[in-house]
Length: 183
Image (cartoon, rainbow, N blue to C red):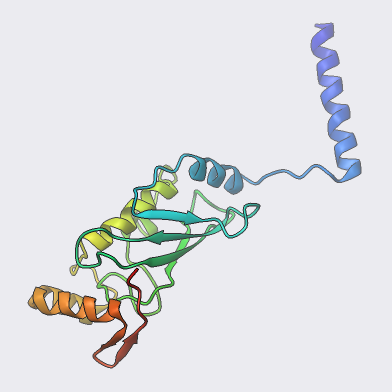
């Protein structure tokens, strides 16, 4: 009992001296969770994380380089902004690479159910990475943000594939110019 009391006293003294010096900074729940998520990432070989600032894990980039499907050989950069309410709200994810895709609009907004209505706090950054990668393997014309691309995919797969290649090489699809994103 005496030993327990002395340990509590030491802890209390350590906390008060730390506060007085102002040197002790507590990590938020979001920072703790994102640290855990990033440490436990199991990235496929087609994905890599770019931590812009190792001290700021709430903002980072994901680079996806599909090795199959319509988007094979392209390099697509996504920015992640994790709020202080994470994991209770999903990160904000934007595609920085302009892409001809039914589920990504020309402003970079991404239509992925787990980033919106199906988000649950048990989901992780790994879940989002695999969801984004799946969008490149199986674009979903049923729930589009880019309605033109979705319509072409539904009605003429060959033309859709041609438009994707043209966009990835750098060029116009319709009146929209796409920067080259082939690796």
